[in-house]
Amino acid sequence: MPSHVLIIDDDRDICMVKKAQLELDGAFKVTVATEPRKGLKLARSKQPDLILLDIMMPGKDGFEVLKELKNDIETTSIPVIMHTGVDENESRQRAVELYNEDYVLKTADRATLVAVITKALARRTKY
Image 1 (cartoon, one colour):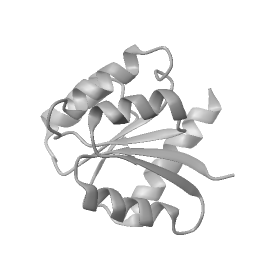
Image 2 (cartoon, one colour):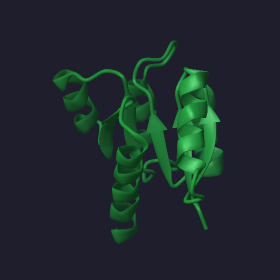
Image 3 (cartoon, one colour):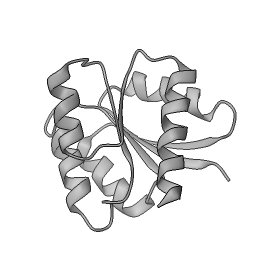
């Protein structure tokens, strides 16, 4: 059965490209939310295996969303990978402090993205 990945990113085009990349070989089923609030709602209702989360979004940024996910008993155990165009040490450090699983740039190729997700999912099944 494919792992369920929820992508939360305000850029619809990025969402569709990443969805197509991840669903290519059938290993992942992808749900997309282009608004942070909708993403939080879907995380609670769908209980995905992993969340791919953008940082820079209008309304609530990815750090606020991550904090809400980790403070909610229903979503705290879902691994979150920050998926962003921002490659700054400060952003990486803040993400680590908020207990994200990993950090991958939007420019990463499909193989890198799949490897990061697979690694995070493997860590989740160990515990």
